[in-house]
Length: 177
Image: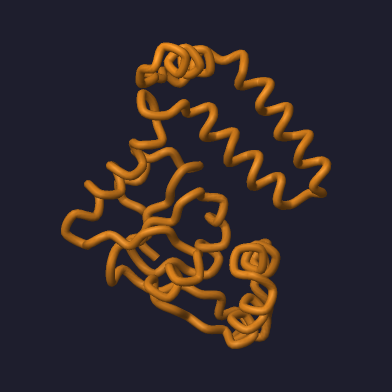
């Protein structure tokens, strides 16, 4: 598996470029990435561990079933199926497939929309934390985490800027603070 050359410029919590066929372990361990962004004809993905006589560990069975649903996860893991990025797109495992020629420019443009000055980075990060953590715990506890994260955000400079921009009917200019 080729590591993600140039991806150090992207926030790791935000996106994970896929420029080659990731190993099953590499793919599962990076599922916390918010957006999977593969390159067209860049490889295939899947959970083939059953072909080795084992199950997709490292949280693979649990994460995969939460993404594609129980029935589809059971089928794909029991078959040990490897599939194309296009098939993965249809299952919701990846978000976009970019052309080889403009891959890095497209990935960087995509990622920049979630960073200051366009978005409040703290809010984006806490949205991810609320969704990821919340999906793994009881609903009532998830609501509590959401309230705590929202309370933290209301004290940020970016929240003050966002609310002021809304009242003044102008675009906000976030600083990541």
